[in-house]
Length: 365
View 1 (spheres, rainbow, N blue to C red):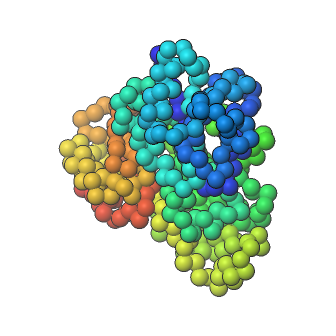
View 2: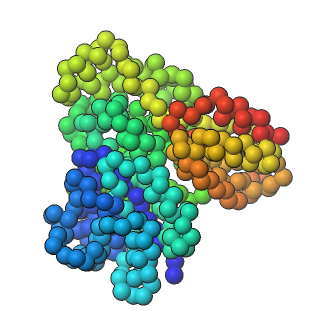
View 3: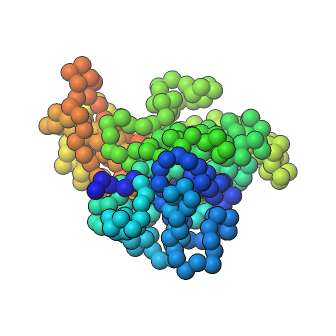
């Protein structure tokens, strides 16, 4: 039986996860989707579409989808669903897991790598993060969980964009891009959301195309004339981010703050940076260095991913990790005219950029 693709849906309360799920559960997209609600949040679907007084945890929807609320742990539920599918008791093509608004998606993602039974049945497709345009600036300032959710994302959907000004939206988009240059950002109009932006994104596939925002990697300026991509330019963004507390903000104090330049939170603790080199890595040195780093900083390392040029290998090495778990895979052969080079992106919380870059440098041949 082929692996069942799984998508993790995360985002703060009110960001529209339930709206998106209802759409997935009721639309005729021809796919049979099992939705797992990981805990009852403040806004769960069941009040609207599900029968609430049933003992049965798994409910078949009219369009063939299956919905399931978890009362025990995720592993058990995933194993249970896979077994029912194998026995032909349940028919579904894929799984979407909605995490609670305050959850860190890391441990949910790790379940797919650490648990052999789960890994044999499922393939983690992507982590989608919903961001509420109106409340995001404040949530990102005040809640690390919100920042972590952004750092983990393979795809970011910005909801409620009609409630903020164009400037505020632009500032938010830039801020998200800094935190996570890997994840494309979409304005989400759930009424007309294309299901292909949600499913089969292959965010966790170890593939040779490194999905980093192309603007982020171009050596030139950002589209709006911002500074280079080496992330030492948070000061350039202060004025931009000021708009995030602009006219749409309910707190005059924030707006005044923005005008007086007290941006005490805009230098987010979730940041990304890229390491590049055209010299090959020494495999032993690199493994030792990464092992040590992951040991110390693993809990703060959200996603890291790269294409590596290794000494002694004719093929690209594709590498990625979540927290303390990392894996690598041999990719395609380097092309005859291709410049062999390594490119890694790290996204994490207050990671010591200098130590990491220096250690990578010292792991080169």
